[in-house]
Amino acid sequence: MAKDVLCEVNSCKNWANGNKCNASSIYVVSHHGSNQARNSEETDCKTFEPKV
Image (tube, rainbow, N blue to C red):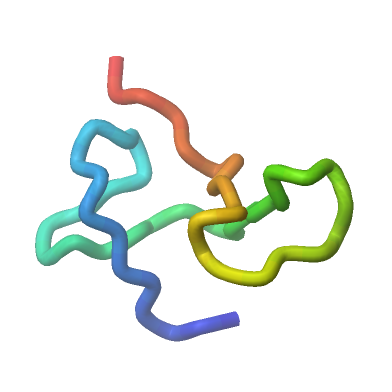
């Protein structure tokens, strides 16, 4: 897994200072419901959880 995963969504509970993601794993899915995506706009990060 990548050593440094960057994320600018500071409303996520996995967000850490320096725009770092401190989740133990990352789950990204395609908008199309398949495992095919042509660019980043066709994907969503399912790891996101809002801060409480």
